[in-house]
Image (cartoon, rainbow, N blue to C red; front, top):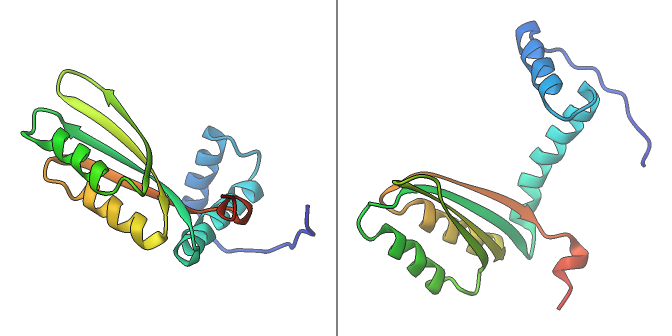
Length: 141
């Protein structure tokens, strides 16, 4: 592990109480570890846009009764087959489905595909999570 640097921050008491509750409920052992994870997450958001190759997951929640939506999701997969490496479809109940799509490609491609999927009419909720590829994996054949 690299050398640690100590930093002091001023935080509103109520905000710190909420953060401490979140730490207690989560898997972090202390504030420092939780703050390091937040910093890494924030920096990763910047890094992925600069990467030559990136990965992403796109999560979609939709009503499968919405006419033609399942077919549209499938069609996006065929159009962008070069970026989509896997998908998972889950029936949540009689009306709703969850689709998780895994992507790999350039940041611009991944943003385009994720926006396309999330923007389909009838998607109730969509979210994309982006990450830069570790250099060793990005250079692998």
